Image (cartoon, rainbow, N blue to C red; front, side, top):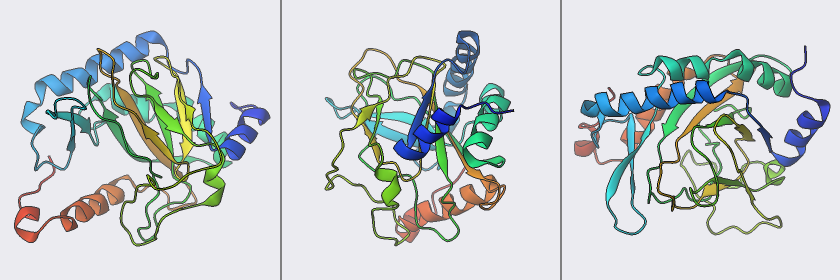
Length: 255
């Protein structure tokens, strides 16, 4: 049974992104919001600059440092785990891949009020055997709009492949201009957006009065490395350690 129309599949392949409305109900989104907020309240012991599970962001006006990301969160939140493995997502990715999908990684971005946005970048990184079928499914928990700093994608640029040096490092594309205008992913809670690892994207600061929580789930095609979730995080943590002087790297941990 096909879950995406031929038009939706063609749009994704041409444009590099696809928006699907109300894939999750308001009750399901509320349950996810409650559980990830519970993790944030109850697991304050994890919020440490040396813990590779969490990341921080600065306030656009004050410079205050705020905790922004749990990466991953599914092992801390049963509701998030259920969403990451939801059949509705896998069915639609099967239609895009033409084969089963495998969960590669997942992270919860809280993006509190005032948090600065993400610089323009592509998600693919030139590590050995990093899957080129990698794509991201973004589930909106809060409204994604201009005020809250919604994700912006540049359509059709994914067809050009990776645009930075293949040196195993993360690169931004702030110095690049494209012959297309970015598309703001206006999402209501329960909507999802799917975009390719080669689709350039960014976001502006959250200027609203509420958090802009989004669950960012990434997958790969089964034929492109199979199950790699544990392998990815082991490599990711090694890569993070390599960015620090040895004395600082030794202080890093994952819990």
